[in-house]
Image 1: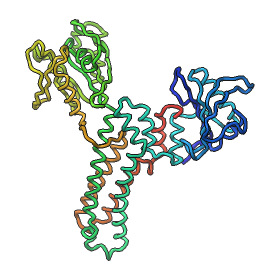
Image 2: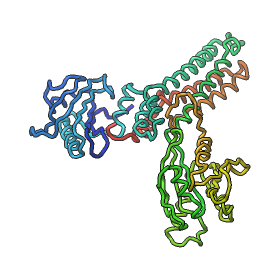
Image 3: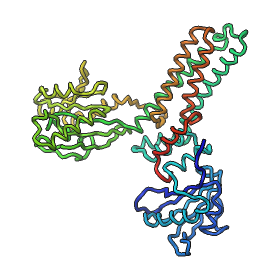
Image 4: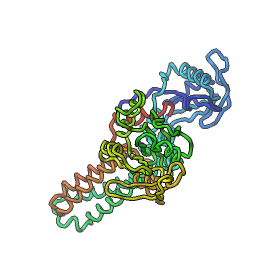
Length: 459
């Protein structure tokens, strides 16, 4: 794999002001950099040293803590130098500039996004799933997501996947060994319980997929779009779900002209609730701003994971409501929300009908909101279990699905007894490749580039 192995440096803390800021450098040998910054014997490996950070002319930039992690006992597997000073952006930029200047003869350069973690992966300090968990832990938007990301970072997800890979590999070796000795093929499937082994692998894979799919919800959340005619109560429902006055609510129709987004949590699942402009026929829109707002509403509907179609329980459905329903994209779950039951006299309820699930509630009085929350969790496929969850990504789910498909085909070949052992073995190999791609045993440079480019600089 062709990579630039020159030493790198970057500010490792978030932009802005803070009590502490960190400048980090990594390279195969940073002793010359340390000598240029502090003197040859100023730092001892893995010891925190309080020391002045100086410019080349001896003037002091800051005073702080310097720590030298000598490779391979470091985050990246290389020498790592961390300078911990005060977190002012100007101070950190001055310190970074000084580090780059001192390391110029070494070829020290500014790190790219995710390059420290990429080096940790390439130097076998982390596998690919663990490396992705680093970014997921940083980006976690809920406590549950943070816990799952931390578990994946510790290697729990990788260990589970590697166990699956080992089971597939063992069965594959058994099949291929039989292919090498044709005289032993007779009744191979029965004698080795190959079908039983395969069944056990499939069941284990299904369990991992369930855990990963629920973990993906923790990472991605759901985009929930509120849709309906003007003044039907979309903004009131957003405020009720958020527990805060996020959107302006007035008796005047068409108050919302652009989308308003609020992220909430239900059982640790992040939901991006998107309030949109009320929909009415273009000729009924009072001005160009409202017409643009309606166009943006349909743009959000096209990207929705769940659509909440709000209707007025007091007045009942109208022709406009029917037109809105007819324009919804296929395949997207839709909940019919009958709002304003405080005026209509309906009781809060969930009514499952052929066309959709109908929920009766009052956003104004916060009545029936819990019914909606439970229904959103049901659509998300969330199940409150005692199982550990892995903060999986889309590529992990795709790899698990593909592995499952190969194992299913392997089962079809196994059903033909010993007549298709070569095809049985090939499907097992393909399943093994898919599973191994999760931890990075089989990964292209392009895939690695995409994954690490989404990290923040300094990590």
